[in-house]
Image 1 (cartoon, rainbow over the protein chains, first blue to last red):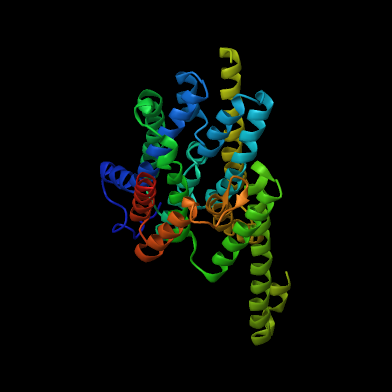
Image 2: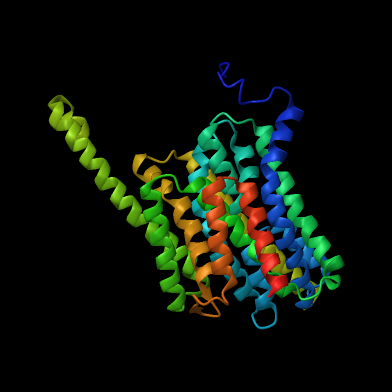
Length: 259
Length: 107
C-alpha cells in the first residue's frame, strides 16, 4: 500500500489507534449499558435461566430481536422465535451490504469478522467515520466493535445480577436509550441532504402506517425497502437528468451516456 | 423450557442473525456492486433508522399517541433538538437518557 497522506487522521501506534476506537465507542456503550441492563432484568422476569440470557447477548447480539424472543418465550414455539429473530434482524442485510464496499482495507476474513459485530449502532458509527476518513485503521475499528459488544454483555450480566435492586424499572424508561441512540445517529450523522430527509420522512411515515395496519415485526423491513426504493428512483431520475444536460453540452459523450 | 430447547433456540437465533449480517458482506466483497445498486444502498441508512425511530416515538400500545402522556414523543423531540443544535452523538444520548429518567422520576 502506498504511504497514504492521512498521517494527521491516523494515530501512529496501535495502542493509540485502539484508544481512538474506544473513544468512538463510548457514546454507544453509554446507550447500550442501560438497555442491556433492562434486557437482563426482563430475562429474569421471563424465567429464562441467567446463562441463556447472557449467552443470547454474546451470540445473537441484537437488541430488538432479543427482547422479542423473551416476549415469545411464554407463547411461541422455537420456530416462531427463530423466524421472528430473522425478520427483525434481516434489516442488517441492508446495512451489511451498504457498508461492505467501504471496508476496502480489510481482507475477506476481517470483513466476515466485522460483519458479526454489525448492530444498528455499530453500523451508524462506522458509516459516519468511513465517510470522513476512508483510510481508517483496522485496529481502531475492531477495538470499537469489541468494546461495544463487551458492554452489551456486561450490561446483561449486571441486569440479571442486580436488576432486582432497581424498583419500577419500567417507569424509568430505560428502553428509551435505544430510541435516543437512533435519534443521535439519524440527526448527527445520517441526514446530510434534503434527499436524505425525504427518504427518512417516507420511511418513518410508511413504518407508522404499516404498523397501524398490523405489519408487526415486518414493519421496519417493509418501510425501509419501500422508502429506499422510492429514494433510489428519485436519485436515478435526477442523475439521468444531469447526464442529459451534460450530453446536450458535449454531444460526443452521447454514446457513453446512453449505456 | 428444557435446556435442549434453550440451546436450540439460542443457536437458531444466532445462525439467522449471523447469516443476515455475513452473507451480504461476502456478496459485495465477491461481486462489486455497480453504480445502480450502490445508489440504492446509499438510501439505506436513512430509510432503516427512520423506520425504527418514528414508530417508536409516535405509536404507543398500537395507536398513534400525540398526547402529553407519550413521553417517548416529547422527550424524543427534545432529544432531536439537542442533536440538531449540538451535532454531538454523545451529548444527544446523555440528554435523551437524562431527560427520560428525570421525567419518569418527577411524574
